[in-house]
Length: 456
Image (tube, rainbow, N blue to C red; front, side, top):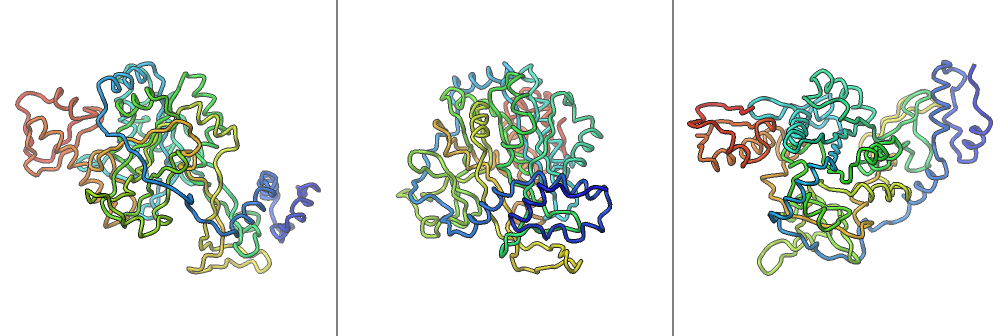
């Protein structure tokens, strides 16, 4: 029969968390073993510091900041050549953040499994994976594909890739790894919340936890062994992203940037997207909810928004920079107050707080890495070419708008090649062409669009 180690019991009492052991005697032995292992892995000192910090007032943004200088999006031939040479050396990996489920879409699977192809119905996972395949073929070197999952999405994501033959990628070139989890605590008392008897309530530790997971699960060490020098970061819900854009990559490499970010310009003050700024000469990001309305509405002499450098979550990181950040302890945690149903061990009931935020969740944000870079770069990209995220079941950022955005992009490519689409839905698989120039070269003579068209 598994018993509670004396040292663990002392730590629980020291930090006022012994309530989690109520009902211990009624737990089956396998649950006891799992619970002891879970509790033994918690840093109670860090948790106490986070709870104390969450109760202190926070501005949520730098005290002083200015609009971010942004480079033009058209790369020079020299920059593009540098990017292509870097890919041809096999020095770039792709990192896809795919820990989210499609609950806001009414989809009870990993969001990456959602079908968005305007003609084919291809999933987000398929579209991104085929871009990786196409890049590997174009430059003659495998592009390692790092897929960050969560405990909720890990198994179904792995099964989906396996069932689909990894979409043509050599399994040796795909690395699945799970983001970390953090215990959730009562906002009033700081006590650990339970999901059920012998089960703590955990939540994902945020997209910034990606970096810690890369280090802790040995992925950064593997990248070093494979000669990877740069990591291209993006989120699974954006099917328009130009994976390893050679011009962007070349500028990043040529300037020896530690972290580089794509930027989409805001056109409306109320748009819910984080804004890049500079503070003390470094790049930083302010969440839209933390940017005062009067600053969000400010405009330059030409009428453009002054704080307009929106964040589409497309970044390039030097691997050595990621190693330094993780060696220094990773990124800071931020507390968020949320409404969380929880198990009350004294009564054996599940308490539903309704809409009242009763819990503290702790998350890390990837953009907290930006101010720690000594050399950084921000490059403009056009929204219609590279940013069309899937967030909602209807309205903005919905399946309808994503499919329409993909269709418009492919129609533009065809029209640039002199092929009218006549209003028919069109789709270009990455396996056929990664961009308009490649499409133009591959179209057969006399090609016409006479109905829904998939080029694959």
